[in-house]
Length: 238
Image: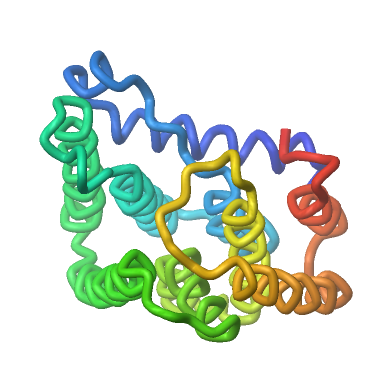
């Protein structure tokens, strides 16, 4: 499989997800919510690498894309401005996306997976709450929480289909990208982590990612190249 085919799979997935999430009123007011291409890529990584696409996987990955969108858009809610019309629409959009994930799974009879994913979502929200409260945090503790926040739903998917061998790479890469974003003062921040802790966490996760990038022989060579591009600040997925 070449890079063009891989990019086509990712683009088709994002298009299908946008279609599944679309709601005319919300779309008119806030437009398309940007799907996180990094999470989409690592969600689909084992599927693409092993060529295992089927209707069940397609349904579950779409549902996970919907819950990722719900969790991500809820991060944009400013508690101090929650009464504004725009913020209320943001809340509604998140709730709509969450409902879509449940609808997809329920229509496909995935009730056991719904329960497993519900536990994961609760755990993710617990970790988010702790970070948002601004409690003191160690670098290791921050990385552990972000592993759950960034990759918890993907981990549940990997476990369901015995893709656990991909988890460490996905966790490390997504947490690295999240901490890197947190270090960017131009980006809106939703935590109060001490700068020294953030810097130490970044150095730790960067070293861990370097090791993971050296052990990707189980991946298609084109996928390896794309991952290097994803985590290289001078390149991008597009």
